[in-house]
Length: 404
Image 1 (tube, rainbow, N blue to C red):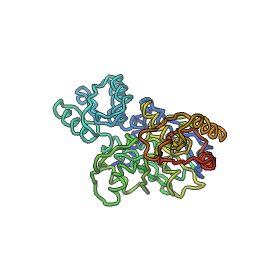
Image 2: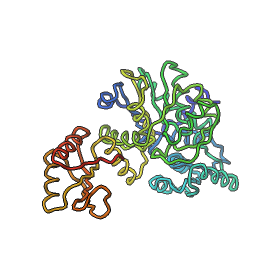
Image 3: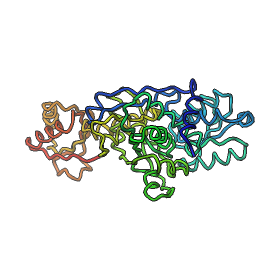
Image 4: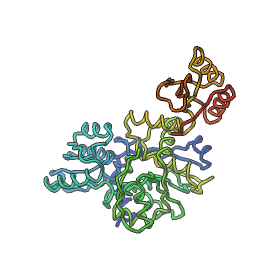
């Protein structure tokens, strides 16, 4: 098991090796959520996530012989980045196995740090199995992403930082994948401040820790996709489950749309880029009844390694959920000037058309002599969408708003 002393020793060991990230107050997020909200910016670590804490703490405790042989790791991305970077810093060779779908930014960065990166398998579990095999074949030390006391202790240093940065802390909301971060932070904080609540957040698609805590067993979930790839873990660890069962107060889940909207809000409000997993705490605070109104709450933004193409998709999904991007299907007479009159009505309500498509042949709604027009509009929100729809209906158009 991991004790508070292990976390305190890890903090001393890691001084100068990792960045003590800031934890600023967010006035806007506080106003939106009703809590007094702070954000722990772990996306500012050198490799872009909290994973450096655990990886560095483990690597720095290896003996000379193990360092000479090198290390292996399996990762959805962030853990591999952290191992690659700190192995290079300590003069060790590293082999990182990632799933074939791992974000390109994480693959490229790991290779840039000098690691041998192998893409293997359709999911983390397959990559994990292959990494274990390689470690045995080559005599490498396997660096587990979460189920190792040294890794958990390293992640727990974040909790000690929070107690110093926010001594009036009431609650911490933290992403949960395999459970290393949540377990370490909960142990560090609640050992010293038992009244502080620690709330874990998972994606609805892969609620491994939530199920494990409910059943008392390390259930293995079927494969599933989520934009929170950093916490897409099908089975939590033995060590992390035992620690979470003792120290974590509650684990909740959030939907893909809620994650996307949280990424978008952090881009717009905090001017900070986070990946889906990093946005999970904000998604939970805004969409779940956590009982934190008026309390001092820290959201752990665990990482910021996200592909630009994924950002574009997340922004689009977030805009749709937020009511700032909408699709309307409108039936109108197929005659000269009909489209001009339609667009004039939309312009009168200050809607901005970003895409428009005609469909005469394949529409199932349009009669002979009619055409279906599919419009994608930028709006300021639900109120403006309803105003546009009402004006079009009053003008005699048949309007449908397909749900995303």
